[in-house]
Image 1 (cartoon, rainbow, N blue to C red):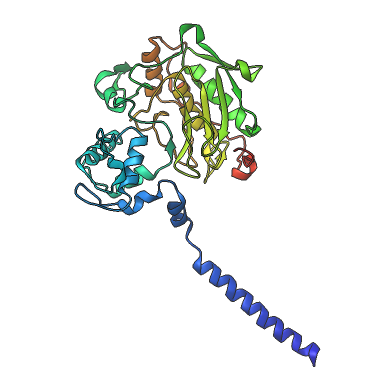
Image 2: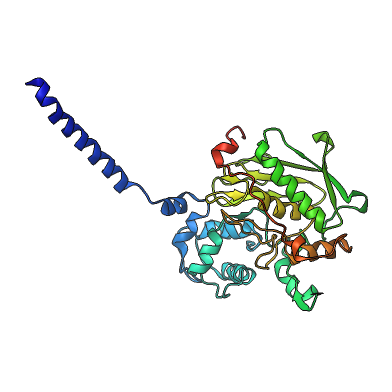
Length: 347
């Protein structure tokens, strides 16, 4: 009799197990919602619709966000960060942000503005020392390419336009200890792309101590005074000439080439090398110096990026500016998720 009853109890056990699995799937948070809650910029979502005169919990975090990227500066001797008042100063900052990102400058946190603010981006500021270089380009930098008249929106790293001296047009680079080997080839390719479109040349230094530029991965507070913020938010940063430091956020998922759910190492390197050479952020859609970057996307250099370097150094490029040079063919060598790059050892 015991042998005959065993299948019956097995069916009961199997049924309970299936019910438990179904319950777990029903209660699991959808990926998109979870990403919004865990992203460093996720707090912005519940501020949608806010405008001047409102007082909403989290407004002070918005002020800190806009201060980080150069838009908001508290009144002298008054700590406006500590409150959640949507004041006139904040409205002005939001309007400037909207102008820089080609949004309707209402000063209201509409859905489009919130979506743009929540997007992953470079950790560098858009406005430096009060100078909104992303807007200056619309007025001052005009040039012709072929039969087309264009207006450049490139900018420089600060109002005094730091750059490498003429004795340093050949720059060496090195990788910090712990840099995943899979990341080195995409970075080297990014240097080759810049070399093919500018007067600069690059080579890997034989000794890291002799390198003009250092590249590595870090997470959170990694000792350079510009902390990362975990998955999402700011994904990389680099410093103006002649500092030479370039860091990827080790908490992000990285890949070689366009891989859904990860950032392309080479595309981000192209952007950060632009900073290393002295370029600031651009408001031109499609420029490599746009502040934002999406997962699963690859980009090449844009005419605006090349014109920025020419203007900064007052030189012509060594090679003609053609589409084949500005948008080099991108070959996906392999795809690696976050775990395969093995950044877990970075502190």
